[in-house]
Image 1 (spheres, rainbow, N blue to C red):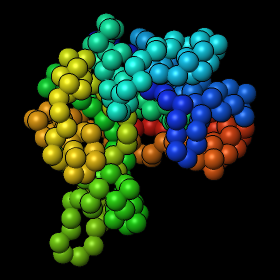
Image 2: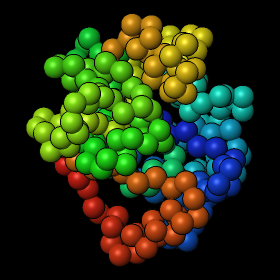
Image 3: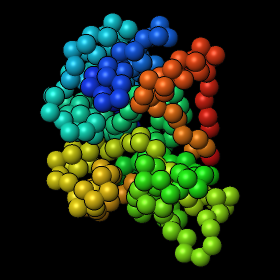
Length: 255
């Protein structure tokens, strides 16, 4: 099974424009993501997919493999699909370009989940331990069946506890926060990227509901903690502090 990691990266960002090229650590932010992805044991190839010449040139400068893609893609998934259409890979892993702390073991876990031939996709989740996260619409939740496949994703608190309060200490965990990293079987990615948005997807504003709404299967792996992305200047300052304190070698194990 040949696995390619694709990192979509764009220059525009409402809260932190140009963040892939931030360089206070001595490395571009996108370089941190790329190097972490390269440490995944399963990765035969790692690409940065961008529509911005500045990012393309920066990736080439540090020895990475950039791919120039169209500028009209509405999502990172569509950008990954463009790469998939022209690359020989059985599975593609979509790693967000603002995740410089991504654990290489997460990518390997996704690849392992894709060894199940009945899974069209795979993604990750982390146990919810905070009532505020459980109720927040900004935290996407996922519920799974007994085989570890996603039943539904929602911004609402799911599963809803009708009587009493949620037991966040239950084992195995029932309350899960979805993490935005995906693995796709190549043929399925091309199929789903060409499909129109599903009504569930449009309602919740969650792309993965296009998969469930059209009968696709998504395997879910559970890890112990969420990797922290960089969305704001404060996030980046915190990442720089973490990096300078030696956090670059930190990894976590699957739950």
